[in-house]
Length: 165
Image (cartoon, rainbow, N blue to C red; front, side, top):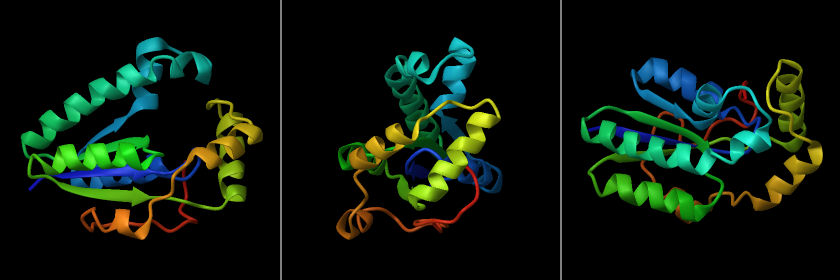
């Protein structure tokens, strides 16, 4: 049975690092919106690229469902900050007979901010600390009852100190 892995967390949580590791270990398809945005639209500000995020993620979701139907694992590396998003992707995948694992990464603010600053110094997107604090208020952390709706997997909840971005 194919498995859909959803990365869940704020910028700097370690989602893409974990997704890359899982991609290698599981021989899975990894769909990271930021990668496609940079490839399709070139270097640009986060704000400029975010204008295209909804369309890229919609296309990636169509690809994900097709690959899952073909029996291959998929890692959707988007962050899925709201329960409504997570419920939608979980239910659509489970309706196709697919196992769905939520990869929750939720390190403390200080760790997120340190990683974000390091990425910016290496040419990554610039994110201000004020933006990070605002986004933290938007992030709907999964509740125990929500987590129970997902299948267990190799990293159902990931150590908050995990390395990466």
